[in-house]
Amino acid sequence: MMIKLLEKLPSAQCPKLIHRVVDGVCGQSGPRRTDYGERWSLTEWVELMNALSSFIRFGVGRGCSDQEIQELLSDLDTARAEALLQCVRSRFDEIRYALVDRTNGISSTQLQDFNWQLKLALSSDKLSALNTPLLNLSLDLKENGIQRLVNIEMNKEELHTLISALEAANKVMLEGIVHPKMKIQGIDKFV
Image (cartoon, rainbow, N blue to C red):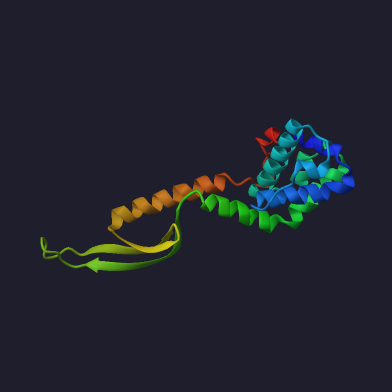
């Protein structure tokens, strides 16, 4: 259990170290090994930092409850487990924002706003009586800091295909969220 390496540090100094790890997760400067003397070998330090930051990202990213976090830290002594829990609880929103920002940074294009308009095409140059509903979807995108507008016109079948794809993506996203009563799997690589 890599987080157990935290027990080499006096419990009174744990909150400071954990907050520095959270700083690192949030894109600020993280802790430096030299600030904590020779408590850990270089390998132990890297393993501890990876375990703590992974645990924090996992706990916040999955929306773990206090009880779930305590269960995951059951092998760690109470004072250090409580310090980790208090840090995650007090900086939850900041950590969540950093994780969302990191995820959004994966793609260089972000949706800023959208607008839609329903039209009824009564005729075309090929047919005198068409009576086809069309959806005009306007997407305001930001790509590498530059705003651009994309207009898409869809018929009923294309709209159904888009809605199906969005519903499938939403389902995948929701399945990735752990329900509080569900058993957490995959945490063994952090502890």
